[in-house]
Length: 427
Length: 164
Image 1 (cartoon, rainbow over the protein chains, first blue to last red):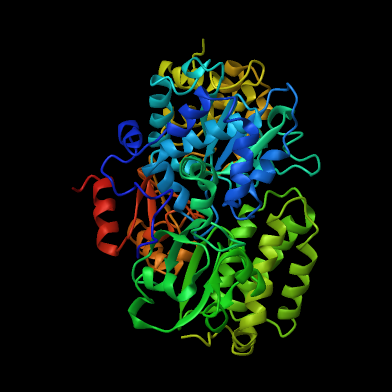
Image 2 (cartoon, chains in turn blue, orange; image 1 turned 135 degrees about the vertical axis):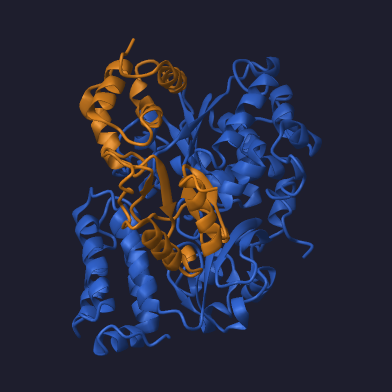
């Protein structure tokens, strides 16, 4: 696999890849230093244009073009903020954790450059609370070492540029991965998403203009500027340029995080992950984290792993977290577990989501307990439809899509279980 | 100074306070509660929450709101060692349900309960902890342990129970 781990993960197998020395040895901070010493050529507009040309899209799941997002920031003298979303918690997803652990300086440099591009002199990196001992010490040490080396702070390397960076630790709440829920949490409140508009670019942290980007997105920036937008874009396809880190979990022989070119065939991805576990047949894949729609084997086998192909298949690339499911797995039990997650994690702010996610879980629970009724499948679809599109944030939609897609593709398994008092068709 | 919070906790709270602009000390509530909970071996009391509110100068209700919203904060007495077993889909597909039932059986408690000697708290079934490629996994006193099997789990429990 020559095209494997080329950008963000390029150095992660070096010993001590997380240290400043090792990062500098790999050419780290060269872009940040170049910008600081040559601001008349390396303007903020130049940075934004390069990022636009690279085609980089937000890797947190939504896939919004990063350069375009940055260009929304107002050009006034207001205090502005760059915030990194390291609240990695979409079920199936665990690649930001490895960035924080093995390549934290790429994130520090990426945040400094992003701050420069959007005119933010302060950055916060919001790390999920459970990472307290797992990878927070690494990213915290990286920030400290960058300060000690004079790469952060007031008047960095005599450039006249200020950039302060702070790590923040959450305390356990999936909803804080939603960018405005994250900002509320960073302000010390319950992580309940804000109604939009206004968007964070106009009203963000402490009411000031703010850009929130995902860890992988920001950690990619230094390499894009070092090697050129075209170099990065050429890894992928025309519409999905660059690379993506896939977290491949579930029924494969070698689960892992693999940085691969976008547009790679599904078959190749499964090869990289060592094939299906125990030589079984593939049944289905949840392609981009639990919020994306499940795809049966016969559909995903014809897909390439990029934004367009998966959208055409009526699912989404999401976070690139592929949960691989082999034959013999009960799809009703799996959906029940997914629905329990959304029920547990709903922030409770919007009635359709707060009440609806409970309905979904309880109906699925009674089906698996042999108490299901013939009318339950229509009821599930009805409740899901009443949540979708009727909530402040995308969490509501994310709770509805798995239900709709599991029932669409595996209707017969649900029906069988209802008719046979909880007995699964899958065993 | 506070009589409830230890010097160590206060030092930690000051560290969090230093990260935010003047007047935005509310942002330090989460970090402060982590410190206060750590001081008290894993759970918060009203006394501790009130002391945090007084020290960072925010209304008590703002501290209570945070303490009750986030899953890492415990507001009831729980066991000293915290075990969280992930049972979300990636772990479920790799056998987390058997891991969980084994631990429940061995400790003689259900999820959400602590052992009667106050030694181990088996946290209510845990949502995805972002270690999906190392499934099944669990977190013991904030440390991630991946690729679990029953033998590995037993070794960890032996250690927590002081048997090894």
